[in-house]
Length: 212
Image 1 (cartoon, rainbow, N blue to C red):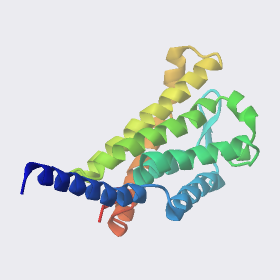
Image 2: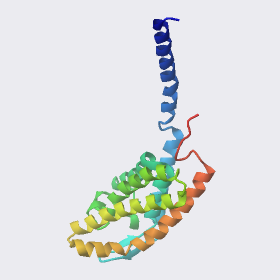
Image 3: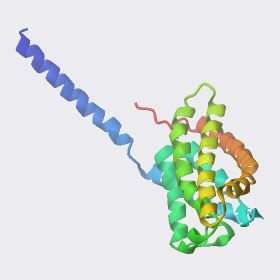
């Protein structure tokens, strides 16, 4: 076999591999199941306000179950779908559905003291989801998932502090006011990890899809 024939066979082989790889990439795109999961977790976010919040702090921002669901979105769905679920929830609330804490709704919520936390939900879910893809493969999976959830919590609280400052607080006072919410969020992150671990055991491909 001469050199030209071998080069032709290599080109044909590379072309064949390229064609077989395309379906694998295509399976990574969102399908009906992905969209359903996004809708379900956005609905969970909305349903979480059914449990009455506890108003604390100088501005009376309530402690709710919303941060629990935000953590679950990232830990269970990953970066893209988790962010989409929380983003969908925030969007529906801003256009008028009474699904924010206290059954509030509309753009006026962005002028409230809790505005920073609401915006932070989206970025927090993104950070958790980004880290969860790594954490679920870790040897110490539970600890890694908890670390991912705490990283997202830090992001949410950072946005919350900025929101307080924009309402006229000093940075020091805003950080002290925010500390009140941390113990509850740590407990909620533990619960989110327990739920996420159960779901990942039941559905191994839920977060990290296997290529067949």
